[in-house]
Image 1: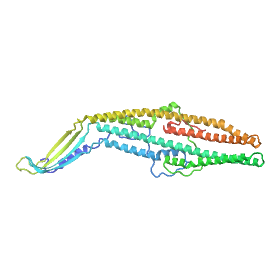
Image 2: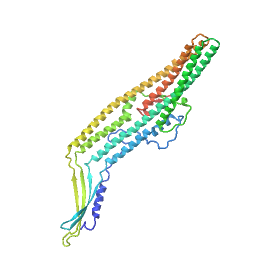
Image 3: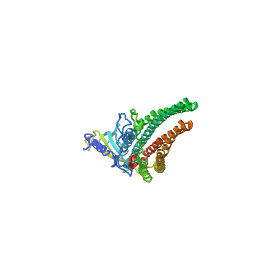
Image 4: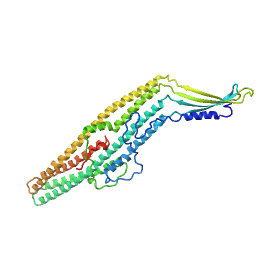
Length: 461
């Protein structure tokens, strides 16, 4: 009587069936540096963002160190990293077998059989998808997680670009303040000169009033510049995700524009080959192809294997096999008769694939346009720097000095001197603005490509 005394034999069968249903883990799990199903992967995996509790930072630290902190501690980067972790966790979920079912049944009225009454029934069943279906689902989930991983890289680039832009604007603001402060002091000197000439009756009172009005206008301009300090510093704190300590020497800090860029053709190829946004769409495209394969699998049946144990009570003792338990093995096959959902899934996957292909083509054109705009802005800024520093500004300063001497000797009008002073101020500000625009263009390039692909050679200027 092999199944008579206790349900242990059936329980052993159940345990064996449960053991067989362990997760069919894909053979190529999403390791950070690996590739799967044709998905591009960078040489270095993205390092996890920094831990909580980041200390304050000082602008006087190295720019490279601050950029590293911005890439690791920016809240947007940290959020994208956690989104990637969540997407990775989906792989094992969709590539594992479904949970088995255990059923227990009793009879309200005893059913008599030849060997005795049936007292109860215990069963376990396990579903098995068509071979290859779970692996395809895992490949699709992995592809989608790789697309999210590229969002982490893009978030790092955006954080880097945001920091560099606000960093450059804050340095420009400090330098513009110093230039404007010097202009206010210059106008005070002009006011004193005109006042002394007025006291000696060499000029009219109108010259003194014009000098005072010009000084007050310039002082108001200086106050307006100072009002922009805190907003820019708040943007810097948001880019790094940590509070900043006070800095009084912004004008002495370095603008990140002292680099030689590779040729335009090299950058164009690098953008098309290395942009994380394009890589994210490439991963999504692989996921769409896997979704098409998964839709094809929906047309194949799934299987279910089960074991049922029925325990039999004591029957007629003179009957052979009286009271022996019954053990049955069941096999169920799904019949995929409903074709409409299957065709709908196929069409959906095909439409998503075509959509991603169009998005990729549009993104490539947009990235090339952004690259061209940033390169043109960088080149134009360097041209203006050379023009103002080497030609316009020296001549404007010489013109002002000559006009001031002529005014003091009564050979030039007061308005001519004021105009000459304004030109000097405008050219000085324009020089600083041009250098800042060069740094801003480099910051825009940082939003498109990693810095390692942007810098050709570090040069001293």
